[in-house]
Amino acid sequence: MALFRPDAVTVWRDEEVRRRLKWYRSVMLNRTPAKFLILKTIPVDVDLEKEDEKELWRINDELHKHALELFEKYFESCKPIEDLKFTKPSFLDLKIELAYRIIRSCHFCEWRCGVNRLEGQRGVCRLDRKTYVSSFFHHYGEEAPLIGLDGQGGSGTIFFSSCTFHCVFCQNWDISQAKYPQDTGVEVNAEKLASIARRLRIDGAANINFVGGEPTPNLHTILESLRYLDVNVPILWNSNMYMSEESMKILIDVIDIWLPDFKYWSNECARRLSKVGGKEGYREVVTRNHLIASKYGDMIIRHLVMPNHLECDTKPILKWIAENIRDKVLVNIMEQYRPEFQVLSKPHLYNDISRRPYKEEILEAYRYAKELGIIYEPVS
Image (tube, rainbow, N blue to C red; front, side, top):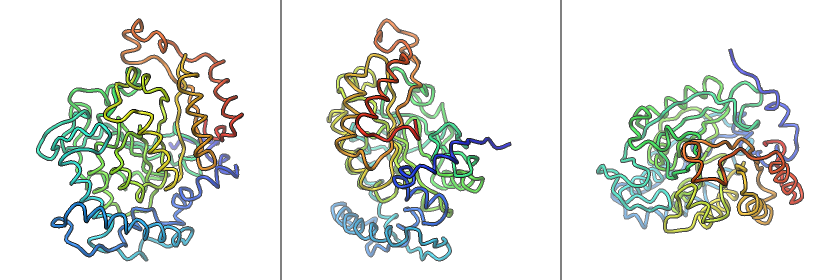
């Protein structure tokens, strides 16, 4: 029996929700082809495997401009997939080739490990070239606009094993922090991943929600799966947003709606609580990627309010959003933090986050967001 979320229906009465998520809504309703489908119609006139990587990036940048024109052309066109003229090799194929170039000296994320994952080497994510899915299902606990206009479809969520972060409070630690990711999921290739996405959409999912763990280490498999996906569905990127600039250049023409985390403002908090910093500071990478994503796709930003972190993280993050991308995004101010994983087992090491947030802390976050003019209520 299908679940029902009444707020998934009523949320679309909000004019700001409709305006800020207009592309996503149109694809969800099959009025607009998803971006990955449009990319399949853009021809590439070179031998992708033999071409120099620098030239591939030049072609990517050139075709990016053409793709933006086509996105505008096809918006609300109600053009069915059957009327799209796919070509090979396509712009999507070029992006797949670039992903496989990157993974040979892996820099999908800003750890930039530089290992050859195609030959079995593993970096911070502990993955070689193989992709593992821990579960997939119709998720009814996501933000209201992601459930479907009838409140019944759910978000077609695909959970990947492993992660590029090592959060001490991770609620999905069993799949994200395992030493051997293959122990927490089933190996899938591109065709299998496409068949999972296809079944979710046919069974009523409002979108395909790539999450984890973290989807970024699996970018090559995800992109290649879209080559085989033959149904129209919004592609949702549910990520910690620690991608490299190269990964962002690939993704901006593929993702219909972004669902990024913005965890910290303080780089010290990021290092201490998520063991992340890499060659670039957390804040520098994530603000860069949020800015880029806000220009190329609809967006709901998630921020998890943690106890004792209003001043060092929550308020500066909300202020940055207000000053840079306030009128383009919705913000989910999340109150469901609870001590998990290492915080639960070793609370003396993490005294500041060893409890749930007080009601007063959540209300203060809401108050400050409202003062800044941030739209948060429909999705929080």
